[in-house]
Image (cartoon, rainbow, N blue to C red; front, top):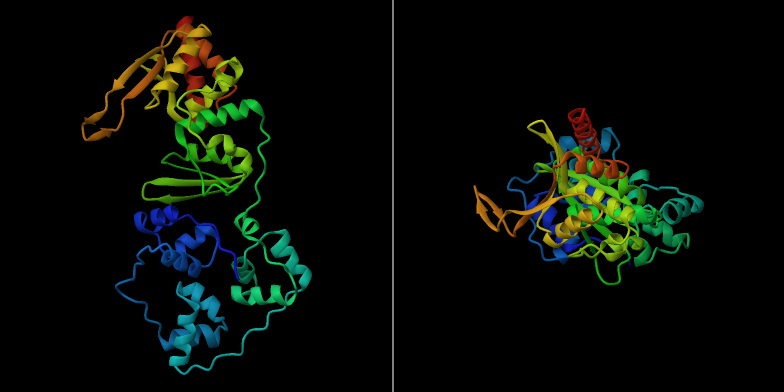
Length: 367
C-alpha cells in the first residue's frame, strides 16, 4: 500500500477550481504523478473538469513516438500530458504491436540511496529510469527495502530546525503578523506551512531568503501575482498563532522590539519622501498591534502619530472589512533616530533602499 502525499483539500480547491490549473500543473507543484492529483480530486469530491475537445491521438503520431523514436508509453503519456493507460489502449486499438515490458535494472544500493537517503518519491525515481512508479514499487518490495511510513513520506523535502536566535525570531513574528498565512494540516502534523501572495519580486525574494533556507520553498505566478508557499519544521510553531498584541518578551526588550518592528515594516510599512520630506508609515487592520508600536516608540523617545485612516466600509469601489489604522513618524529628529535603529534589521531590499534615501533626505535638510 502506497503512502499518500500530503495535499490539503483547500490547496486543491484553490489551485484547481479558483486558479484553474490542470492536474498536470498541480502535479508539477507537488512533484508527483498527475494520476495522484486526479485520485485526490475524487477523494475530496472536487468536481473534475473535462475538456470540451478531447485529445485525438493519431495512429501516425503513436507510430512516430512508440516505434520510430522508441519512447515508452510512460514517456509518451508525459509528453502528451495524458494518462499512460490511454496511450496503451490506443496502441491496442490501432493494432500497433506493443513491446515487452521494459526491464529496468537498479541496484539495491542505488534504490536505497535514491529512496531512503535522498528521499525521492516513486514518481521521481521512475522519471529517472523512464518507467512507471509501480515498477519502482515492485523493485523496492523485491529488494526488501522498507517503505517510508506516513510521517516520513510527508517529509518529502528536508527541513532545518529554527536556529536563528531571538532577534530573528522577533523579526519573523513581526513579518508573519503583517504578511503571512500560517497553518498546520492537522493536530498531529509536524509540518508548518506558510503562504502568501504578492505582486512584488522583492517580497518573494525576501521570503525565500528569510524562510526558504529552512525548508521547501516554491512559488508560481498565478493570475497577476506570485503564489508563495514554504514548508517548515515543527520548531517554527511560534508562527502558528497570529497574536492580537505584541508579546511581552518583545515589548520588554528594545532590541527585540526593533527587530519585530523591522519585520512588520518589511511586510506592511514604507519609508518614502513626500513633498521633499521623508516619512515613515506603517498601516494595517491590526489596531492593537499598531497601538502597542505607537506606545513603545513613544516610551523610547520617538514621537509618533496614530490615527484611524479609513473606517470600515466601501470607498471608491474598494472594500475595507475593518477599520484601517496608521502609525507615522514625521519629525526629522525622531525619524532619523528610528531609521538608524531599523537600518541593521531591515531585510527587504526596496525598504532598505527607501530607508537610505529617507536618511539622506533628513541629513540634507538638517544641513
